[in-house]
Length: 286
Ligand code: PDD
Image (cartoon, rainbow, N blue to C red):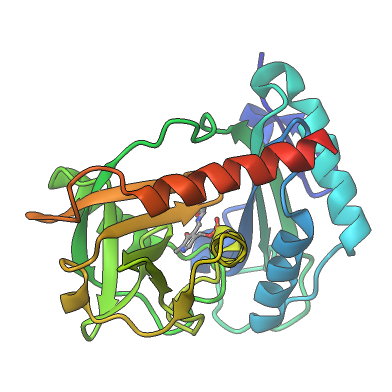
């Protein structure tokens, strides 16, 4: 059984999906992407993911090749085409590049036709039991437009691979000592019952999971502060977690050689992870 991908209007077996070497995505990482989790065939927070996709496209001056309804239809068709391989819970990867030029040239001389790829993969099991992870602090070496979900992920992959090589699960990043985010996640910190996370800016990707977690924290009566966090505040935190669409919530129990809180999963982390799970179950039950 093989995956089916959507490539520029066609549904084809993944191994036969090919793009030109002159695609600007391949040559210049000139494109943007989204990752959308799917539960029981329903793309989760699809509207918010599409909003962010349209924002990313606007930021790079690329017109969306499809409207919202067309995107939703393509995504649903990819989900259906991959039911036999991945089941009802999937992770949808969607990428738009500026397209194929006549030769490799920095300047786009004539309007090109965007390249669109949508594919599915298995979604990691939902976080009913939280898996504690260890992180390492690293200087954020990325550019200053991290709010764009750009396919240029070399800095992110270099940092997380270095973290992995040193025995850590994620790189937590800082810019001039100010916490930004994880290499592929957003970061939250709990201190004395209050929740803190860096504010949205050009230095972080505004995560869809981050937004939902803030809503859930407020609903749970917790105070949430979206404000600058100095890295010296990290070791003094009672709890830290990272989050993303695919990993949901991962408790951070140590950063480098510093144990966070009690070194085990904290009560606020457990509570918010349970709220997230309940929110998803409720949505699917409706
Ligand atoms: N990445 N920050 C960065 C740098 C990310 O790459 C991601 C997610 C997030 C969390 O965003 P969201 O909650 O919308 O998933 C934050 C995806 C999962 C990826 O690149 O695979």
